[in-house]
Image (cartoon, rainbow, N blue to C red; front, side):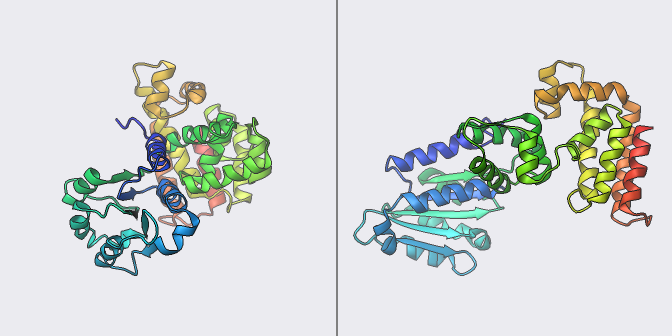
Length: 340
């Protein structure tokens, strides 16, 4: 089990070492989530050298334009009128076919160089020599994509560090609207923090007014209405979606409903139905557990199985396979079948 899935402790440790003047000779930043790769790289770019030193001693290379040999020859240069030089290799994933050639440099890196390799959306093979060598002589940082249920916790930690808080429903609205892309979510949080004063507890109304996500007509509210068997409310939300298809694509709605009913199916199979265990097994905030308890009473396991099959069928139809039906009609038909 990953003890720090949000990666913040590891990032803070890297930043602290650099602040103390203990920068490592190589930083190999890799993985599916570019947010932390960019953050660490930007921090090194702005903080290892002074502004005067950067002109002669900071080099930015792009993977598509250079070879590993070019990277190594730049890294082996000596700094001019400074203790260190920084070589940043951006989009290094374009060098993935030859990346193992970096081994010989990694075995004996130039002590006066800080080499930063941004290897986005890919990872090194941990069994191979390059990973082991960089890990020994420098830093290998893997930025893993967060699961949807981890993002709300990430939002909370980011905001807490800046003296803000966010209500669970507001965080859920952001995640459902923006997905798990931390860069996009961070941009929206930055906007909110510019508008709202420190100490604010950010609520769904703040999200609606400043980001443009409806607090009443969204997938979170649709799932809650379905779970509560609130037929009228669910129909109102579906009508809103049908009239605003760009903001509420059918594919996204079907996907989120599928996740929801899969969680309900898991809930029915749990022997330990304590609040903590439900939250852990379903991957949800304890704040939302009561919603699942209510929904499970309204939808027995057999009905949940039928709904999952309906959602699979609707997903196929939404992509134009087997039936020509408008998204509006498909959504209304799907809702009727789920709730009756």
